[in-house]
Length: 278
Ligand SMILES: Cc1ncc(C[n+]2csc(CCOP(=O)(O)OP(=O)(O)O)c2C)c(N)n1
Image 1 (cartoon, protein in one colour):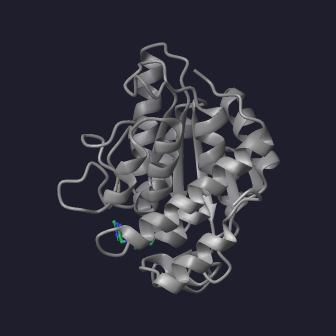
Image 2 (cartoon, protein in one colour):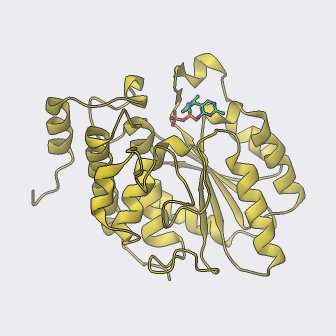
């Protein structure tokens, strides 16, 4: 079942995801990852509230599109999207990272309805996504597989094995999305291992490449929908993003990679993310 939200509705869904990310960061047992989660809030809103075929009342529905959150530490954003779509009770969001919670610090497919694959160990997601995509093709299922990768994560060698194998297999039901926010946990990707020329790297492996502003909802939706329809080759969407997007003091400040906000910081963030009616 596809939810046909308008671009305005998707912007609102992204705002609510961001508010939940801040709530989770404030309430979680130990520091969660608000910066990496805010970076992908718009992309996730577009996927869960428009692009992906899914049924929250039947998370294991065989015909659904699949999501692999390869940068698994950003899961507060996915938990917020899943709660927003009705996969589970919103009250669960107050339990993230707690012992025994169904919402762990990294996604666990055996604990959380709607999580298609366990992740958190960086570098594995594209291979997992490719395996799922090829299995779906063998089963003659017309389902898409979306894999969200961190830019720092691209330093993992296994990613490039999957990039090579996916084009060899003409896995056109696979879409990779690179969250190109120019940070990893210990600093800037441009200083640690520069990724440019990013576009040329993927093109040289024979992928179809789209490049977008990862916070422009119209661009996000249009390219995700084009990727889903694209045939003959896998698609990568290079999404230019800002780590911490939406909260002024978190934007491009990598100290928010993993950190708990103070009460004052929490209040400021929630004020900034308040909608017109709040
Ligand atoms: C194999 C592996 N090594 C190290 C880590 C620890 N770790 C968690 S997040 C992170 C940085 C990820 O950077 P990036 O992919 O750019 O994502 P961002 O959070 O910046 O969006 C690291 C090294 C991990 N989760 N897995």
